[in-house]
Amino acid sequence: MTIAHDIKTVLEFFDALGFERLPVTIKRKSTGTQVQTDNRKGATGLQSFKTSELKKAALEALREEIGDCLRCKLSKQRQTIVFGEGNPDADLMFIGEAPGREEDSQGRPFVGDAGKLLTRLIEKMGFVREEVYIGNIIKCRPPMNRDPEEDEVTTCLPFIARQIEIIAPTIIVSLGRISAHILINTKIPITKLRGRFSEYRGIPLMPTFHPAYLLRSPKDKWLVWEDVQKVLARLKEGKK
Ligand code: URA
Image 1 (cartoon, rainbow, N blue to C red):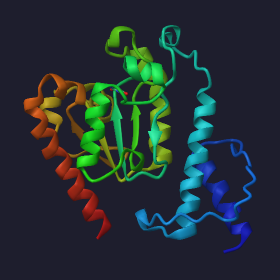
Image 2 (image 1 turned 90 degrees about the vertical axis):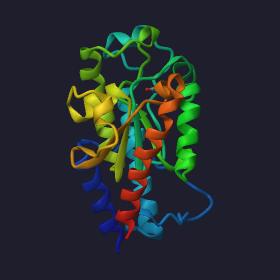
Image 3 (image 1 turned 60 degrees about the vertical axis):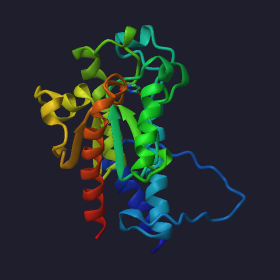
């Protein structure tokens, strides 16, 4: 591999994601080459490190593009934009609806009571939170946690779409009715959608209940557990 080849790969990557300029800030490190040991998605060593770094840079550039967003009326009452967080090269991506009060104040997704339940679910699945990516359809808290309105979804959806495109997860888990309805483009009730794989732009998507719903109806936790078993089985299949 030559440097020219590496540069070509980087340029092709950003071009494919629709960037018109290279959004990378060069940071000098005094510690020499860092090589990640992450072997997932078939990449090894330096190759995997490069993919992950490119995706991280692309996500940072997207965050910069969003800026101090005033594109919709949610900007008037929000405290913080909740961009999303996690592994830029995650196999598994969880997508909720919109930040709640705690997320709005901390600027991080799923950190309130529902978020703690989600974190426990992720850990029971055998991951740590930092290994997956967690985002929302909408990046600003709707007042009183009301459902996002159509114009707000239309404005914000392209950003989570770009995050999905950059991360290119193996599987998406959508959390709750709104996320499933928007990503699958359907109005079928979540009780009927959950537990069966659907698709978002060719990526398998498992709709399941929202953790906030499980706080109100803990008796349905086992259904979510069933849903994520299917996700784990599909992930394992992909690794054979
Ligand atoms: N509910 C969501 O849908 N997303 C969050 O980030 C928090 C609560």
